[in-house]
Length: 299
Image (tube, rainbow, N blue to C red; front, side):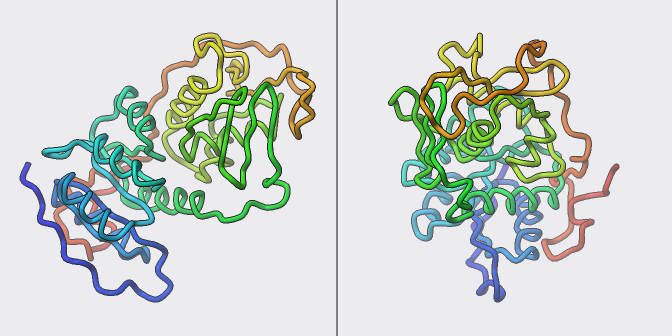
């Protein structure tokens, strides 16, 4: 597919703009749709059609968030994400037609904070952007959320955004950190994936497999044996629960009691969330059009 030309810088964003977003996609139609929706939502948006152009724009002016297509010419989205994250943390939402779990996991490993597959709803993408930026720029946590958390050798500092296990630093993405912090604040309590999506991601809808992938990645970083998890447990018919032994650390969450002995089972396959039904690549209209830009809406 032919590279879309890099768009010239937008005119000054409207007063009260919500942040700067860099959209990287080699499909001109998809890029125009995404840029149009984000710009109308109040964001200052720039666009790049390939990896090198994206890195050049990123170096020239660090964006608040990057919407990054996976399948790019010359340099794929994974490599672009790695190179961007090498210069410091920046929220990244992967945008791709490949919805395999293996790709989602690799995207999370390279530092992506969210993963949206095509076909997608541009309005949902805007909500995802809002949610990721809200979590990334939340500022100083409230007093009850700022206290260090500890248990089972885990130590988290929400203010410093640092985490360790048995003294070894954990390299956690934005979402992994927030998910682990939430579970440490509520040890012994089982949460459904819908609850976790609402409480940690701030979404009332979305692909629930996103939660499953983050749980799996988190287990890989905090469990002694991820294949036999002893901390983050799967609770049959409910969701997930963090179990902490009475390790005597005296942390805010250590030694908490809760649901014990609940039946557990392996995670079941996830099905795509049914609301993502608008296929952006088929949209023929320009960015300034109405919601019909993304194609005919389907329930």
